[in-house]
Length: 321
Image: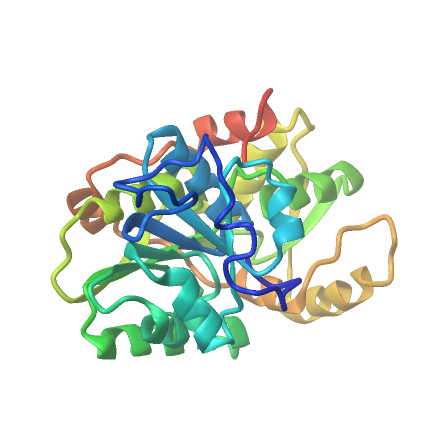
């Protein structure tokens, strides 16, 4: 997201002449974004933000990345000049969003209130939340999503907060990639309940498609919408599908009570060769995460990628951000 760096003045690099920068009606003699432009993307150097910027740029949409770290933005190699802002600095953020017809935030939903306050009053808002808000376990991440959603719903602003399920398929993501790393080291995988709880992961490409579709829809007031893959499946089946896509032997899955797995998760932080597994992740493996995607299909008008095809993209040649 936009978690590191900061302190730079708003507009650093944003006014440089960029022949490859998409514009709409630029002012004569002024380089950089026009007074009014199509979309600002907060958290543009994160995985979802960068993927969206690439898609908008490819379609010739006037987009301005809003990031905290110019250095991190540079690592994306996306040929757009950013505006530098910290979501915790109202003046910087307001200046960075000035002129946007639409504001997309891929930052954590807990920042929603600050973004709402800083965005131009007439701008459409597309915010990313998370289905983690449905967890029954105490969870700071989920609490932040709920607080951000409450602020958005109370704002009366036009737009939507999209709540993705587990996102996979981006370079460097730590869902299926980390799971595959774990499967390479463990011939036996202990799971609570034998992995019978349901999951419904969504490919990064479909998250981008959902945001693009939301940008093109005339929202009336604030909305919330779950975005998910086409079908839920038991976590054990998901694990086997990841193993197959990664070219690994199917693991032996055994059912283990929750308490010993929580202890093992704590120990995993001390074992250098094993990916760290967090206790909160283990607890959430006991919850069904299955959702009706009919509202997503009706409102956003696309069919999500089947898991097998999404995993083939993820582990095949040219896996994308």
